[in-house]
Length: 389
Image (cartoon, rainbow, N blue to C red; front, side, top):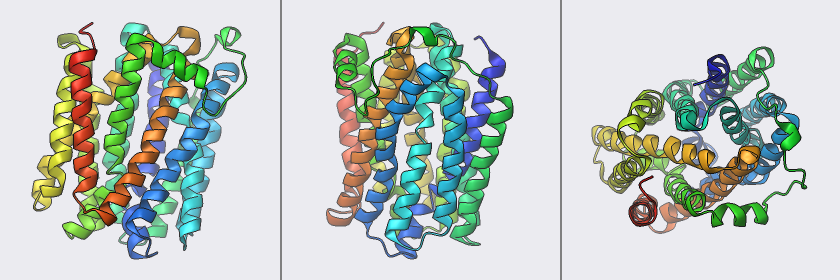
């Protein structure tokens, strides 16, 4: 793999930023429910608003980074993310909490730029491994962040918000001094106008035999996961009577497994298994985990089921993203990856909306069973439509 110093820097930048994001993951739904009295569906709307802003800004930042470079947009978005957490600390209403997550969504649109950064500095054959580093940064952020968040929430939710802001600001400072530019092929970028959702790019990408299937697979997988973004913490709080700290431990466990799989095991598994086999294995594990989460009985049962779920999701994401990047044209990496992130952001919008609605009006089991069903659909698509090589 080339440019190891740059890979290390982008990994550390994303990791520090995701530490702040991870702090809020286990506590935001319980904070909104317990202190602000927001309904389950209202929590789904707040969670979905983050992804809605990513849907709008992912293609914009991806396209601009193709033209002006990756670094400015990674640096600027980190400062905006830090500001959003400060607003969270002062949130005392639905609308202020909504504003916080919307600004956070704009800042969180830097992930497509980070993926394009990885594509810039890795060869095609090492692309999955490079994307695995982004997944490992997510995983490690979810190891320490939720555990810290669960602990800090016992002091106060505002204190946890300030801690999140501090981590993102640290990533901002780190990126200013240590993150080099990676995009030196700007003369070949697509000079057409910026669109929030480029239907021409969508049609072009989805019509490509392999790329189209991969993007659809990723969309369904993300939707299945997004069903539980807000409802997993609510399940622990309302069904199993878990504390914020225990919920944080569960998210931390998922983060540990994700980091190990995406940062270590995925490097070796790609040498012994084809991408199709890895997708099939990951899909089966994710389907079992999602389907069993509402029936975990107690904390220990949830530990076992969360482990199965995490093994599946940690296998799927870097493999599919690596393949999407591998089949995308070299001079359109930012555009295609931005579209893929934007398209998957639609899944992150629909998932929490459905999850919150189903949790409140249909029963606590339905968000998880819905995710398991659609994961089965991806198993079917992968087995019959995706070729071995």
